[in-house]
Length: 308
Length: 247
Image (cartoon, rainbow over all chains, first blue to last red; front, side, top):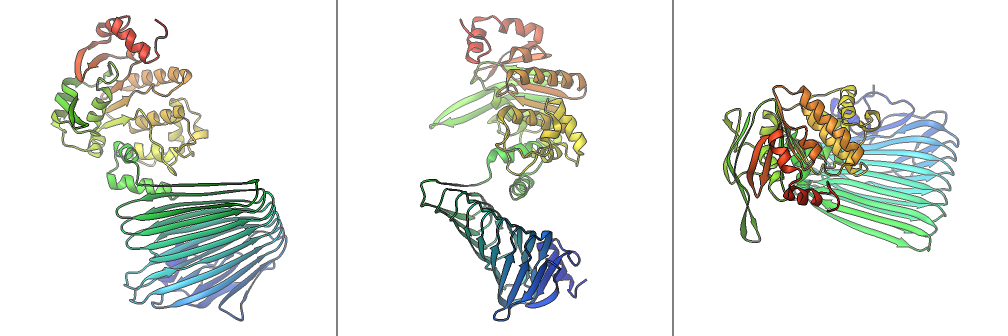
């Protein structure tokens, strides 16, 4: 195993389900240093020379390979901005697992801002999983501001799964995507905030080519005094299909703002936005209580299911 | 097993006090299938909710094996052995049929066990066990899953609020069979069904007629059923519920 302490190992398992060195290509970053890296015959990982970050090159036609690039921070007061670029060759089919775990036991804020750019070749398929997790009892905040830019060529598919369930005090996520003809983007975001946390998620997806499609769905829960903003905009510049959905549960004093944004610049652009925000339905609680759960247990079951 | 003593329930409707249930008394002994019937608005569903603890009575008592459970909440009553099937089943995003059956059974039952419950309500188990209990299921499918959760619960008293509501004719035949089978297997337990359906009344051991919030009549099926069927009042009621068509 890599030279990581138990807290770092725990963070790794939370964000990337990693308990040992992953198969395939990987780069594990711990407190701003590379704790381990491996390239494969088809996937090359190199450090950027001008700024902090990586370039990941996936050869055309690479099939069923994976790249893990998790980041862990355990030093209080550490702030970093990392630029990672992914070049996915035509017809490749890969899984990319990113994610950041911060454990902050100190009184200074810890912050990781990962700026990821994806250049996805023709007919390539990418599945991207990004999990955020925070822990530690210090007064210092755990801050994550991911920026994601996706450029999809003809016929490519990108599926993104973004998960932030626990412990991140402040996050501003910005995702932009530009899709050429026949390209497809699917985003599934799951978010839970508690305490005084704040999470802002902004998407701007531009469908430039014929039959491009985007499906951006966020399911979120805001508890305690937390605040969330989901701002999803789809721009249709061609005959295309776009759908965004914000489905949210508010609890306690939680607040959520959903901002629908659709812009159709072509007569055959079909764009749909759905948003629903509300507390847990009383009937759902009652049903589970008639099955023997307490009100608190019923709430947990409903939220766990909702965020599955 | 369960006894309702002078049970009353009032609500405020536009500032006017309205009594939905008025001084209801009756007992549910062990090993009985009891059907509560009566006109719409007579308080049947409210009575079922008062038994399950979903509503709290404004007067009177609910006794469970001699113990006063009037102040006990839904969860406490469920744990004592009272289960409740909703007239309008609830949907859950992300919770699968098997999850709901596991919660109902109170233990981690196997997929095979879950399939037994689903099969007994006429659902092809393999197609349903992993599905989410969400809006993708039809009303009839949800209803059958609702009944399966009550079967999985295996409670001492199972209360069904209008199980026939929202199910098609084919499923209805199946439903009658489910209740017949349940009736055969109960010994230390009982079933209470709120229903308008003559065919459900026919499988009752005992019928309670609830009208204007009070018990109008109660007795064995043979005593009560003939008086309900064919009477002018019953015909009006049956037409209202679509059981009998025409004049």
